[in-house]
Length: 235
Image (cartoon, rainbow, N blue to C red; front, side):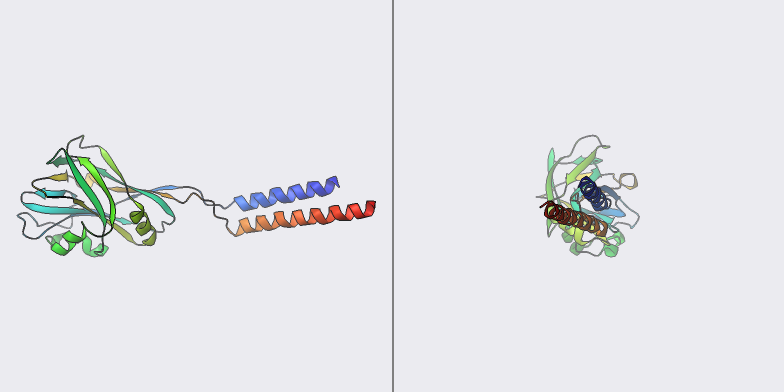
């Protein structure tokens, strides 16, 4: 009888080890923006831009309304449960605190990077409308080197997961009536944004896990049969 119990225990241990060898683990990924910049509304004084300009100012400056964007190549990123956009502060102006909103972007990624075509009302409007990814109060003063973190909401997380294998873009706009109010002035190549995401931490059994479960089940069934046979022999 002891031998039967030992074999069953070994089977259970082997099964559990097989079932836990290949389970999903919580992982944090940091993606650096593949491109970023701004688009101006038509009718401003300084709406011209260039493809090489990675400055991501947003707001109103010199009678020109600007909105920014950040574009990320997600690769095969899947199972995202949280996402945080990190941006260097640089310089701001206007009220002590400005309201910054982030939004989904329907403009194709390759078109978005053609910043030389600014100003463009369609793209400008796209960067500040649609699904909201979060609204934040941001002070206009502070250490220019400070990295600001914006925890994106469930709309953004859903869109990140839906865009796996593709580009994912975020539009940024100051909200309300603007008069020489802006954030992130003098930003550029030394301040590329980052998208920090956490993936699903729930263990997901892979084929080997199913094999482990089968081994445990068979071991338990075999032990039960042997025990009944032993009792019958005694009687």
